[in-house]
Amino acid sequence: MKNEITNQMTIANTLFVKVQHKYGNRLIYPNCPLSFAFTDLLGTKTLPSNAIETIKGMGFQFKVESEEI
Image (cartoon, rainbow, N blue to C red; front, side):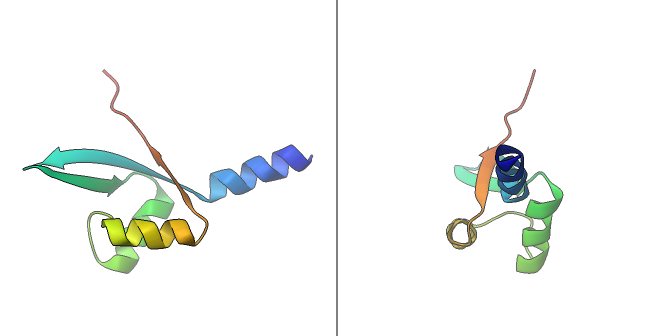
């Protein structure tokens, strides 16, 4: 039971994102409702590095979803 609760908390605190490189810049795009909510709050389409550090400080984790072929 305890592991199930811990797993649910971990999933609830995980933001899924995609990383794209454009014109030499690394851009972090939201890829789940929670990460989209943060970009809405920030008024941006991507998550800037300073916002990522702040979000991590709040106890959230980031998982990068890779592109499948």
